[in-house]
Image 1 (cartoon, rainbow over the protein chains, first blue to last red):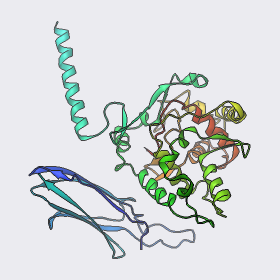
Image 2 (image 1 turned 90 degrees about the horizontal axis):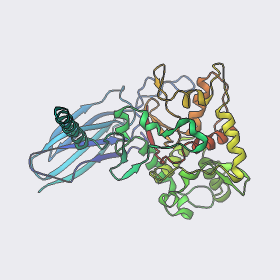
Image 3 (image 1 turned 30 degrees about the vertical axis):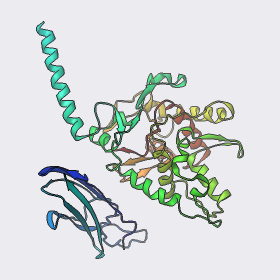
Image 4 (image 1 turned 180 degrees about the vertical axis):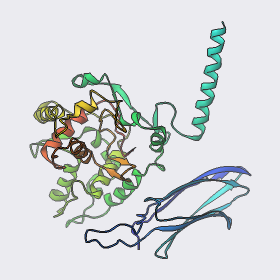
Length: 109
Length: 286
């Protein structure tokens, strides 16, 4: 189990219909590649976030596969068009089977 | 007349460019404003004893635009992860007394004057103390911790980053007179002493040759107002004295230890060369 994993998301809370907004996400994670060895020469087992998904009202916006070469604390920034009020959900999938989730409401006024 | 018109046209296009950049990013020109609300002084007149520099410049002014922009927004600054971790530690119990930092200090914001004024003479111990030494003193003498944070441990660097983050925008203003003067003189002596097989002093690079390239590296003035620095090549926060060690190592010399009296003296002297700049850490550097 990876320790101290905390997801962070920055999403605007309001938007106009059809507006393209910028979303920033960051999750603290060691992203151990599985290529390194410890002091005794034993391979440190791989432990990474292997998938990241963002969805808006259930519809997938972005679905990312992460590989071991991605460095610690993976950061994603992307744009999304907001057609209506709703909830944006973010899910990170860990190698150990756990998932980390965050959600933000966006109001179209 | 034609000339004036042409200049006017140029001014308009420059303005348009600036406006575009401002829309997408927080950084405009050479001004660093963190989170759009904390202005940072990145250039200032040099103090008398550092008059060779003319203008003192934060290391931020030497970095590429991409790196500069990462520091303008806490969300983009990976060093803030360390600050968050330290904020949790600040409120958690340490040692035998069941006390946390917050038991005495309420919140980190109440310590916003610390980072800019340390290293500082400590009357009780009769020595100049860095922030790290002060944290260790609290932990061992007041909180009953047998094993305080290691001087260069991640926990310690995070804690210094927290104290630095709440002090951002306040001026660096370390005292160099009075009882601290002897230590400061020792630091000055070290600054101009050539070390290692390459026989390089701090001044050779950071006073005589700042803004020049040393092979692939763009030399800064070696200011430490922005430490702890998140170094992209290390993907971690780096403490001031760890950076000193790296510099002396690069001269192919045997370095002083992190936390040694020599490095404390050097830290006081180098900090004083930045008197007038803003506290900036945790910063982002390459």
